[in-house]
Structures are given as structure tokens and as C-alpha cells.
Amino acid sequence: MNSFVELLVLAGIAVFLILRLRGVLGTREGFEKPVARKPEEDRRKKPNLEIVQDGPDWDINDHVAEGSDAAIALAAMKRVDPSFNVSEFLGGARGAYEMILMAFEKGDLNEIKAFISDEVYEAFAFVVEDRKAKGLTVDATFIGVSDMSLVEAEFDDATKEAEISMRFKSEMTSVVRDIGGDIVEGSDKEVKRQKDTWTFSRVMDAGDPNWKLVATGE
Image 1 (cartoon, rainbow, N blue to C red):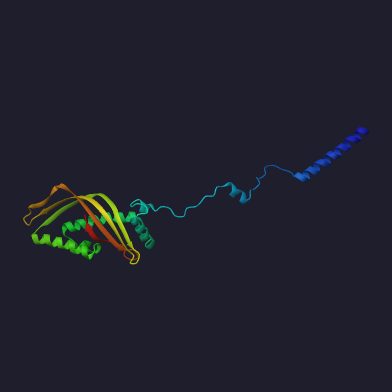
Image 2 (cartoon, rainbow, N blue to C red; image 1 turned 60 degrees about the vertical axis):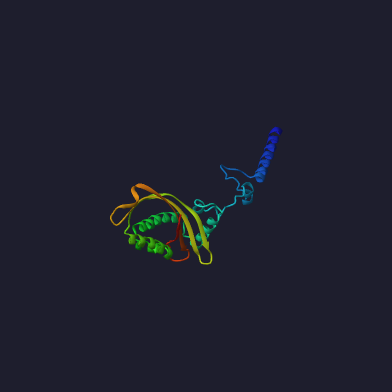
């Protein structure tokens, strides 16, 4: 009998201890989500990454040296006219070179008058009129531009006028004939290699997006 009473007392003590432990530790049932760390803890564990807002402008650096006077001038052009793109300009300059050069060779300046300055027009017109006076005609075929590079860029902050100088290497055939049709210069079978440095100009905040040829040289 005493043994039975002792067992009841021990069982009661055990139940009491279990209930106390449950009250202190709590219970876990099934899968519980991990304890969320405070944002401060996450920041301590993650490296501080600095976000770079501005990087190199490869549209400029692909064509001129980074930090050069030309690069600074091109960047200034872009600030005034955000639509300006150097690569697109180069593509347009290549097309303009062929169009203007061939119009000059053929003596037809009317179709290019809007794309050249008055000074360049007068210089071209002088040569064209001199040919006519001598009875000379030119038969030219443009083969293509073999090389092209941007050699200089300038920008005037006051007037917003930009100038870009391009160097072209091109190939063509050219035959000059006299009034009787005889060849006096060139050959229709010999490829003529030509080098030109042309300067194009435009006011960047003007409504007209077209550039004009303002100077020529070798």
C-alpha cells in the first residue's frame, strides 16, 4: 500500500515538473518558420555595395581617347543635345562624304548646296566652272571608304556651335576627258586612292539636325 502511495506522489511530481517546463520553454508543433533576423543583422552580414550611377560613355570612348579634348567636346555636345549620338554621326558622315564628293566630281552642286557652307560651295564652284571653261568632263565611280576616323572635335559653350573633323580614305576611279572625248587624266581601270580631312559643323541647340561641311583638306 505504501509503495502505491509513493508511486502516486512521484507521478504527481513528474506531472508538475512537465507542466512547469512547458510553461517556461513553450512547445513546438510541426514545421515552424525560422526566426526573422532584424534588418540591422542583415546589413552587418552583407557587404556594402556601392551603386555606380555614371559609367564610361562608350559611344564616345569607342572613337576618341577617354578624357581627351575631343571626348570632352563630344560630351558637351551631348549635354546640349541628348539625341546626339557619335556612332550615328559617323555613319551619316560616311554617307555625306560619298554624296558630296561624287556631286563635286560630276559638277552638280545644286543637290548638295544645303549640306555645305557658302565658303566650301564657292571653292567647289570655282573648280567646276574652271573645268567647264576648259571643256573638261569627269567620269567618276565611287568604290568605297576604306578607312574613316574622328580626328578632332570642338565645342563653343557660348554659341553652342560644334565642329567635328573626320579623316577619310577612299577608293574610286576617275577619268577626265577633253571636249573631244580624249582622256587627259586618270583611267577607268586604275583605282585612285584618296585622302581627305573634312570638318562638319552644327549648332547643337538649333532645330535643324543636319551638319554642314565647312572645311576640306588632305
